[in-house]
Image (cartoon, rainbow, N blue to C red; front, side):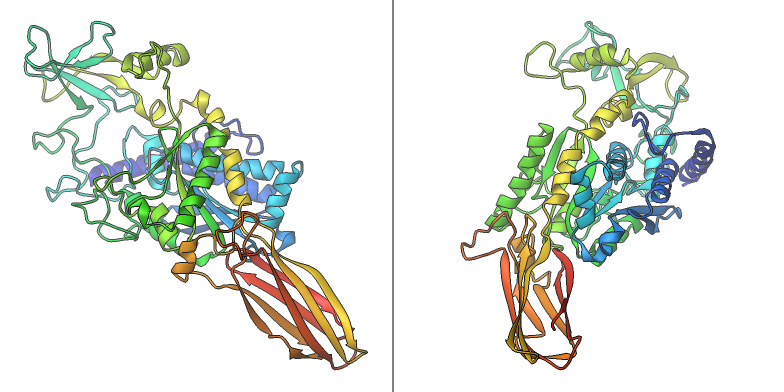
Length: 564
């Protein structure tokens, strides 16, 4: 527990210092650094001030530490309120060390705002849709990972990972004071590793029955803080928030890090509350690292449990990821022993009726120099030497240790080699996903009222009002068949209000069902248009009608019509 307090105090001091030492141009970021939560919030605040007609910035809740969970809402306010437009939700950095997710989200926000005046595509998107961007899903954990040597996946909430009745009592320790927790090697005649003769940085496995060399045990860098004979087995935190969502949530014995109960964490609870309150959200982009691929549904249940039309939709949107990034797509669930319980993408589909994805940013250095079909550590070290001047790997060096006579520490700076790109490659990485991110938002349904006609039936007494309702977007207004099966959303509804007039035939409230978009449907009889026809008695001059079309996903459109 004391480790958590000390680290959080350090983060506060570091964040405070950053505010006064960084002079980044918010309007022209270079995307060559990782932003703390304070810096990220500063960027968001600057953009909100610079683009008041396009942005709303607010907190959707507070973390246990009291940090705000900031959301940037982007849309042209002059073309309608945000709740009248289809929306898309993007977040990043739910896992503390997966810092690239925050940078992808920040870059996307900046890209939209900075290109609104010059790009017809961006202008059309923000005139007709709403973009919700939450760069720092886990601000406390992200700052701990970025600003201290701490290695963690969770928030700093104390957690008993080794079930000894204590929490956070044995984290890794930065023994050489270089700000990085790597590995330590300790000589042991029964050790499982030896130093490679090809490259002394590499520790090779000891072969069965092998003897005659110097052997080592490998540990995470640190000491046995709790004196239980095990090293670094209970670090800061331990909850995996992407196992804490309610769909298919599992107890700790079946899903490590799931938490005490579904939505036990302020961050996950705020997420579900926000998405549930914004039924106009048509999809979820949940940014992670690493691997350079896309996790698609399913996450827990078998693929056969999905409606076939939804299977095709999931694959279609996934294939666009492959087309735009040239990266592979794999299912999050692959066999019954690899369940991922309590994930956001599962909840988004089964309980909210939209398709959600987990892009795993940064494919890393995967160059197979010897073309043997395997990227070995030797290949990785060569890439490190050629591209990073060797700085991605910390050379082994001796340090003092309270428990061992001879200890060396060294190894990969994992946070900024394997888990996240080195900063010199960050700009290229964050730019890579923009096309797919734009396309996802553009696929939403979008309702429009066309071809309004007012025809006189009986002069100055009765008129015939007709209108065509069309989904000019790509997806249907239900998004998925799951949404229909689970009755998650209202059908498209037409509401007619009259002034100085009375309805003779037609309904003041008409359910139009769900309306297909340009993507089409498995149902050959489905159409992207509906016709409305009303007979209306005029009760005097200045007779008016207001026709409103409402859809949870396709937006709300209103037309005011003169009837005289």
